[in-house]
Length: 151
Length: 151
Image 1 (tube, chains in turn red, brown):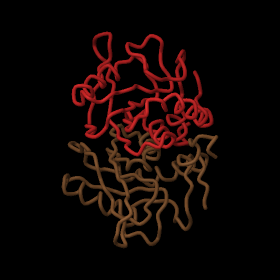
Image 2 (spheres, each protein chain N blue to C red):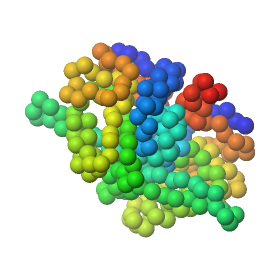
Image 3 (cartoon, rainbow over the protein chains, first blue to last red):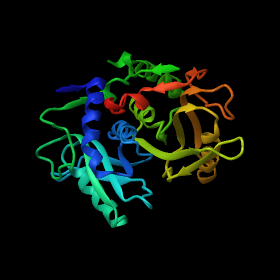
Image 4 (cartoon, chains in turn purple, yellow):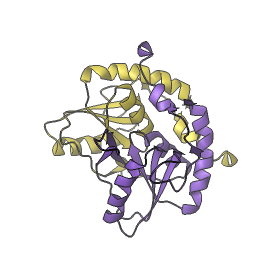
């Protein structure tokens, strides 16, 4: 298990935002819940005011692949270059469900997938990511806010 | 100026989530951008999967009050108890613009405003908050992700 602390995240945002800069995005979509803190950080680093979110929830599917339900609606009128931000691309099912919906709704916009981690086995790889996920990642937002009496 | 570090935030989430627990919220709305990291943290602490966001942007008004533009749309069908989460209630204009819109759209839902800080002079006070804002707050998400070569 990789323990991913806030200090690591802070340094990573410097690198990740530098990699995202050339795209000159005008909008960020956070994939909730996992991508919310990262999307906020990138919005601040890149000075992007248009920060929105969409929900993706995974359910154990009966077939080999998990099912992902996308809910919510982004308003991308006036957006041309959009970063879709999540903490990790794991199986790739979330992005495989989400990206075609956004492209169909906004065919003239350009989308880039940005994550901190990606699994080499994922169906879809992010356009920009920092680390290969070869182990379970224990993100600080999944651990630091749990009630201490439960730990 | 109050420098609000991640370690302070981490402790605050323990207290803030304890104060929010009795409400038994099923949904969290983050006010973007400022409320995104806090809303994510509360969603994890309170184990609330329905995490959404809405945009609020302040513009300098010609009159005494600033103008706040609300954009985006939440999907609160099926939500009964909703936390509206922002980092700070400052003038109160954001909440004064946002809350009536949500109540009009979802009259049967119950809303609670939750922030870390609130100014005593604000038009609207949060239902739950931790600190009075008597000085400018320098939140870590407004500082830690800026390019170091700019600092």
